[in-house]
Image 1 (cartoon, rainbow, N blue to C red):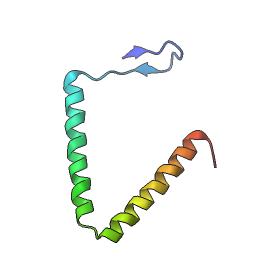
Image 2 (spheres, one colour):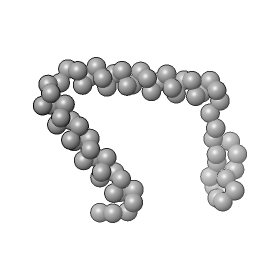
Image 3 (cartoon, rainbow, N blue to C red):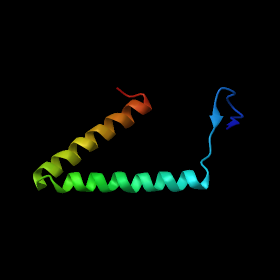
Length: 68
């Protein structure tokens, strides 16, 4: 860890090559699980899930921006 120049409380963390590989592998495994779960849903349920995720993403983005 290295200190952040603008904020002494913050630390910058960098992944090693092995860490990047592990993160990439985990992401692929999680994507596979999501695809498997979505395949079990009907087309209508998949559309409903996507709509719900879009609403959640919009709400999270608004909260991040400080909107209400």
